[in-house]
Length: 536
Image 1 (cartoon, rainbow, N blue to C red):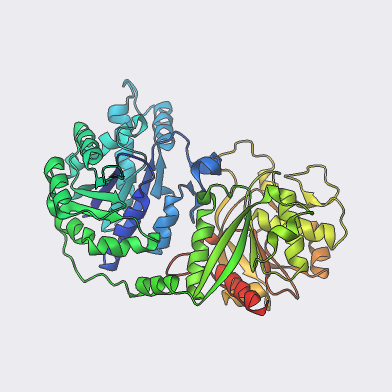
Image 2: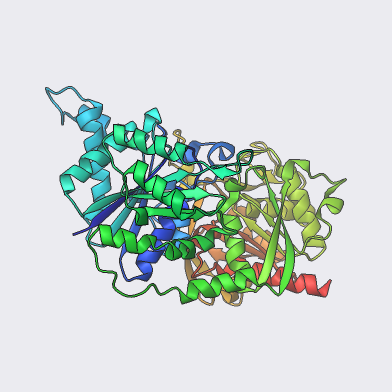
């Protein structure tokens, strides 16, 4: 029978519920258990696909084409297993499902209410993954903070779900904050006590408390928390600030979080966690033999979470190359023909990031021109690839005014245009080309050498594509379409001949990079930047 773990948060947001959930899952996986994690987000949007990256960070896309919360990226990077639409549920989707059923007549004669109809739908979504038979343990992270109005139906659904399951088949981990007051020179437990008290008011007694802290928690503080929060002292877990999120599984192992969880769920500890590869990764991450500077040219660089998967992919690729990748974020708005050389000077490689809309486009194009002409390793993702096509059209093919029809519908040379199946779509949410698609790699190309095979699958999130009307013209001039979708002949990868590394990908390779399997495009891009740094 599948066991269920619920992770809630108190005191403040951004404590790291996603990292704690992923770390616990990693430890349980390392003990031989089949584990998955899902995230319940309390906002009313159906998914984060239409949310501003400045407000919500990146939108993570799954294999089956779901636009989801960025925490699912952490789940995949830690567990090295793909997630799906079932792993991210929002209040919006819950209400949409219930309202659709009401319109179909499923509740004839009944008044549709938060309890029981909304809570029943939440519980149904908790069970979906457990009932597949694929998992021994399902971890469900409840977004937001206990006490938020929008979180209340989820908390009530957890209370009901636990009562229905009975003892030993579920537990609640509550992540809370132990702040350090510098003026008093001590850690304070009162916020945690109040947070647990609020959870108790909703009918839930947490089984384990994970305490985020800047300083180590001594035995007296653990005893005090245990006493006033009504938990065993061995269920008070310290989660001290770490230098990297990839330290957290080992810190939780030291705190015996996984053993405590298994004990409370009446599950055998099985083997000791097998984490040799994880420790090897950490060893290479913390002991680099070289350092390179990579420019991340983007439109949302003020918020690092907007490019979370790209940043983490550089960490994976850097460790693989035993190299520290220092990412320097540059706002594309700020780049002009007059300052680009000065701003980009000294970089060993440049990644032009994804995005939407015209803002900052000319800065990206100017960047690509500079790195192309100066043989600096370049990697373009989604819009970054499209900007490379525009730049090459303007400055090499002589197509004056070449552009994407997204930015300039009246361009005389629409080298990037809207996909045919997107032209009649009017709704915004969940309607882009999303999820995993096949790509055939051209024999003898750099892309084929990087992947080491002739066919790949990668995840997408876009409406615009390379205009095949210009394909032969580009190929004759040296910008090679080296990756093609076999179903619709879409250009997925372009690469430049006679350049150390100039690759643009229409897809998002960062979404598939994990600790266990760093993405080959990032690994090879970092290797090229490292070679460039040594040469120059």
